[in-house]
Every structure is written in structure tokens, then in C-alpha cells.
Image (cartoon, rainbow, N blue to C red; front, side, top):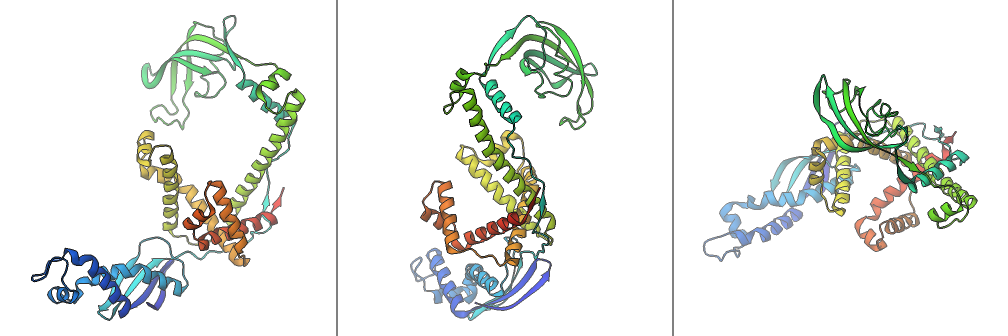
Amino acid sequence: MSLISSNQTETNRCQLEVSVDGAAFQKAINGVYRKQVKNINIPGFRKGKAPRAVIEKMYGKEVFYEDAMQDVYPQALQDAVDEAGIRFVNDKIDLEVVEVSEDGFTFKATVTTYPEVTIDGYKGVEVEAISAEVTEEKINEEIDKARQRASSVATVEDRPAQDGDITVIDFDGYKDGEQFEGGKAENYSLTLGSGNFIPGFEEQIVGHNTDEEFSINVTFPEDYQVDELAGQPVEFKIKLHEIKTRILPELDDEFVKDVSEDASTVEEYKEQISKELAENLTKERENDIEDKLVNALIEKVEGDIPEAMYNNKIDDMLKEFNMRLRSQGLDLQTYLRYVGLTEEAMREQYRDEAEKRVKVRLALEKIAELENLEASDEKVEEEYKTIAESYNMEADKVKSLIPASELKKDVVVGMAMDLVKESAVIK
């Protein structure tokens, strides 16, 4: 194989002219002949035993050319791409045979190339991060959550419903005096103040008593998912069957012993929560900083990005999602039927995230190039170990699945992100 020429035909499209020599072509033709001869009948020869020369004499020398060229194209094109020093995107490849003979063939291939991007101002990015301070208020919030989880429920008979109560109700919705679909339920359990129903619904149950029947009037939000009800005033007829309240356990040493394996007193429990909060809030802060830096890089990177890169990333995300579904005994098509989505609609849902991932990858690759970042063999080996541990696999198995050349690119991208973090101005 030899590269004859390489020319950019339009933005992110490059045409390569490639020649394949006679030796490589004849080897491919022999390979096609060996695969196809078993299905060829030639008078005077047993099926599958006809010599290549006889078949070519009967059907023409070109009989195996098309299939042989198809076999040669992928490697010849990859060699040409490597020689031209370009990166191409998995996209439609336009192929054109220029000339072909027993001495080889020449073809033109037009491929989609990675975009040329620019990025400035990636050092010293200012970020306003969330606080990781552990306050008494946050500690008390965590304790309240634990008390809620350990709470019991008791029926209330001596007072009206109030915010925080669990009510059991029947409801029946009417619009312009007519019942509407999906607006009716019986013995529905609703926690007042949860915000699970449209604004005004839960608030109007407050103050009513067990066995009381009454009506409430609310207006659906303008962005409600059912067009016929969006922004419309409706009436709900309510019957309140039961009022229940949560009884929270006292915050004492006995409660602590019930909910914690590591603490036996209230003070020890608060210290434990404080430590856990510090770890969690620090992680949240670090993730918040990285998210904001990523968004800043996306804003700073410039270039014409091929649509194919976004589509390929969506393909990858769908494959990942499908693999997770299969681990749970489902597949993508079954899931789509369950949730009432088409694959096209789901692809659209992934679109924004796919664009974000593509742009930040291009940004970080460009930063790595500008900063001359290189991944050492030691760093690559560490990354193999990290992946192996996270997936509970042998390192050698990971190496068989991920080529070192590809992993090295990921390591360099990680180094670029570290550089951006280290130089960032955190407020």
C-alpha cells in the first residue's frame, strides 16, 4: 500500500488516494478464491476443486476483484490514514475505484476527520465552589433523617389534618363539570407537604377531619405534561378516610445504639455524622468544582465539530445503558416499550450530554497537546490496575480488552484535567 495524495475537500473531510500493489492484491484474490471455490461448480471438476485459473478463464479475471478489494480496503485505508497523519471519525466513507488490474488497484476514500479546535484561557479559571463546611444545622438534618427512618406511624382521631401528616384519601377530578382521565383514585396515601401533587392540592386538605367530604379547586401548571389540562382550573372532590402521623424516637443513647454500629452515645453519634458529612461534602465540593471547570472548558473550546462525533457518542452511551439493562435481565427494546419511548426519542434525550462529553474531550486533548503532556508507562500501568480493581477483574484481562495506546490517550486527558484543576482559582 502507498499513499498517493491527501487533500482536504471541505471542513473535516479529507480525500485520500491510495494504491495497493499487485502482491497484496493477488494475496487477497487468493484468499477470496479459497473461500468461494467450495461453492463453484465447473464441468470436469468436482465441486470445490476447480483451479483458480480455470474459474478466471470461464468467468473472467475480474471475478474475484470486487470481494478482494473489499477485503483489502480496511487495512489499506488505515495505513494511508496513518501515513497521512490524520485522525478520522467513524462515519460514512465515500469509496471510489480509480483503476484496477491484476497488478493492483487504486482507490480514493473520503473520510470525516477530527476537527481542528482551539482553546485559550484554560489556566486560572475562576470557580465559585459550594461550601464543604460541616455545620450544626447539617448535622441535625442528618439526625432528623435517621429519626424519620426509625419513626412509627399512628392514626390521629382527635384533630384535623396538618402539614406532615399521612392522609388516606379518595379523589375525583372534574374540568368544566366533566371527569377527566387520570384524575381519580381511591385510598390514596398522600403525605401533606411532600409536594407530590400540583400546587394547592395538599395545602387545601390541611384543616379537614377524618371521614369529611369536601371539594378543592386548583389550577394545573402551564407546563403540565397533559396538554388538555395544562394551565386549566379544575375541581377535585375529596373524601378523607384517615389521618396518620409519624412518631419520632427520642434522640438519646438508646436510639443511637439502635441506628449506629460505631457509636453508643449521642455525642459519639454526632461526631460520627460530622466525620461522614465532612467526607461527603468534600467529595461534593470536588465534583462541583470539576463540573464547573468542565463547563468552562466547553465554553472556551472553539472549532467545527462533525455531527458524526455526537452521533457516535450517543451510540456509545446507548450501548453502555443497554449493557446495564442486560445485567438486570432487560434489554433496550424492552425498556423502551416499558417507558413508552422510541429509540430516536431516547437518542434526543442523550444529545446534550453527548455534546458535552465530545467537547470536553476535544478541549482536554488540545490542552494536552499545547502542554506537551505525555503518559509514562508507570502511569498507564497504574490506570490498568485502577480499572481492574473497579471492575473486579485481572489486570491482564483488562489489558486484553483495552490497548495500551488507547489507555495512554485517556491518561493524558486525565493529566490535562489535573492541570486545569491545579491552576484554577477556587473561590
